[in-house]
Image (cartoon, rainbow, N blue to C red; front, side, top):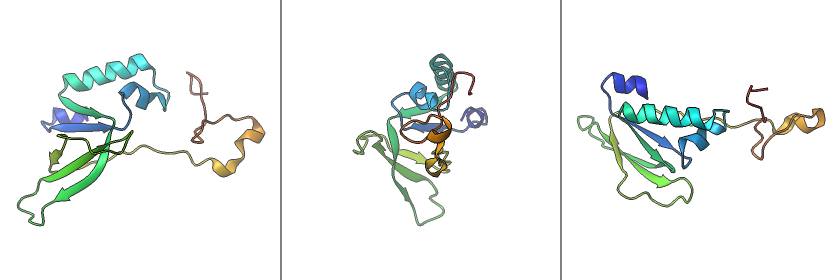
Length: 126
């Protein structure tokens, strides 16, 4: 996001969690580091919308009127997010990843996972 703002693009970042710290905890990022990152993104004019996900994308059939409208909904309730439409020319997604550990029988070798199957690690990612 920051790279694109440096190239004079307007950037809107949708975060499904209610805070960046919560979103980044899943990959082992410390709360303080996450808050520093959020502050840096805001200082670089990245618009961040929390508890949001894409509900629909509306685009024109006319290529000359390129902008599309992204309709949002709350990630937590799936209700429409009023007055939050994002108009843009380009949409880039990075939706994260989910664990694919279901058939590995990790419990039998002492590897702990969370409810989603993600392998639990410590502060040193071990």
